[in-house]
Length: 152
Image 1 (tube, rainbow, N blue to C red):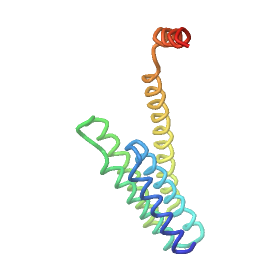
Image 2 (tube, one colour; image 1 turned 180 degrees about the vertical axis):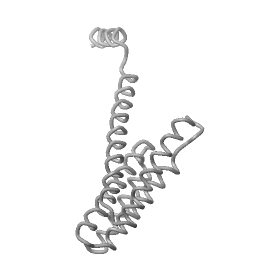
Image 3 (cartoon, rainbow, N blue to C red; image 1 turned 90 degrees about the vertical axis):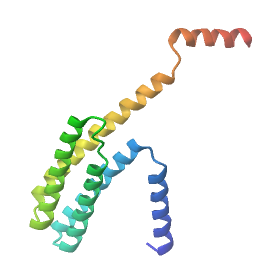
């Protein structure tokens, strides 16, 4: 990849992150953590220990961002549980990195994938609720349709 396309890719990513709603940013973090963990695993399988370190280190940094994004004022009990889960993932990634242990990486990946899947279901539900809220009530829709028909 040449320098121009690398800069263009980085600029595109920067714009995507800067314009994404918070719920999409969370999804992007899950995707990044999964992608970097997979990179670390692949490098570990290929005995590329520097590549494994880099992949797991980047995944760890993403998980730290997940932790930093928690808002205890919203729901302290839930945040405490999520914090514990993210710390567990982080610890598994550290172990995968330091001990070169693919099982630890598998544990982290399994949870990250589950969290991502759950987040996608939540986003789908949110989108459906938003769409429902913008739809006129059935009676209102019928009155609106009748008005359009009668005026037309």
